[in-house]
Image (cartoon, rainbow, N blue to C red; front, side, top):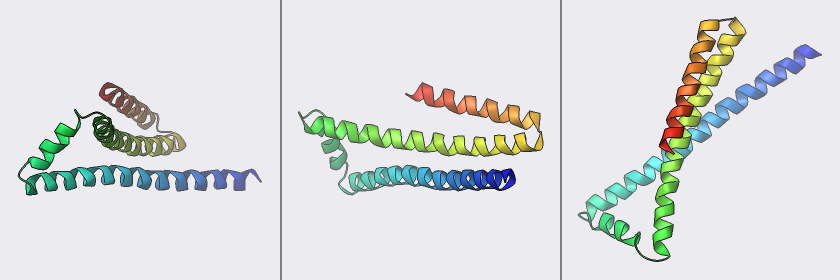
Length: 123
């Protein structure tokens, strides 16, 4: 009974990590694609689209929308990159814990702290 329960938990964890990782990657890729499209439009218009975007930030109402849109893209990129890293570190840590690799577990913990510190500094 406990064996099948343990197997079900492992399978669920594996599913969540792969699904979560792909979803986080998609969020980050989409934010980067939006930025690339914006840069392409700006280049195609000779820089006037970028100038209009920057000018729109100072307009009442529209300024808060454009500023928040830009902040949202920044946050999506940072959070998706950190999330993918965290899932990878968690997978390595679980593998090290199962095999009794204390040094590997310590490295995973150190890497997790680094991701947290890096993310905290950016905010």
